[in-house]
Image (tube, rainbow, N blue to C red; front, side, top):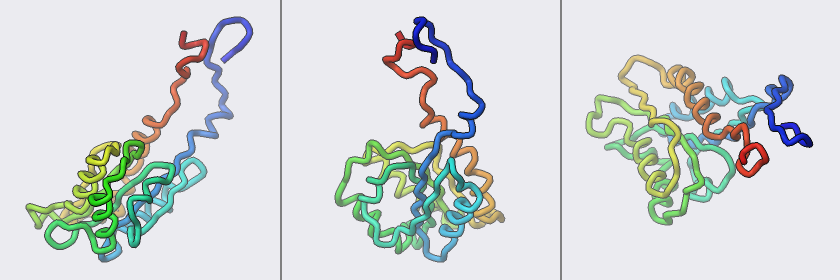
Length: 187
């Protein structure tokens, strides 16, 4: 923007492209066998850099306050038993339902792991978290991704293919507009 003449213009500076919007991503992991944790770690290794800070956290011992942290959230969880969340995720899930915090400022995505041989409960671990977060006012970015263990693909490989499109949606959501409301150019 140019000041002083009353005219407004967008100035493109190639150097500023190097300093793209930096995002903090918290990947919260619900797992019984370690598969969901492996998925999260692969995402961290492949995509974590100066523009995307990724922190992988097992859900063990967490409560709703985890969502008070600044940044985006990705729920990466398997499904266990009859469509339940994994044991390490039960306390967080129960706390969300019991304490009912206002999560209207939270933005999140879900990478759900399941097995389609469990017809009535396929990927319910992730779906349960999605329903709880949505009911508490959080906004999901993109659809819930469902990985099928019977599909012949490794979840970490599928996640590496899925993630760039998801994080692109996140970046678009967080992009500052070219002209801020209230600036001389928006009048």
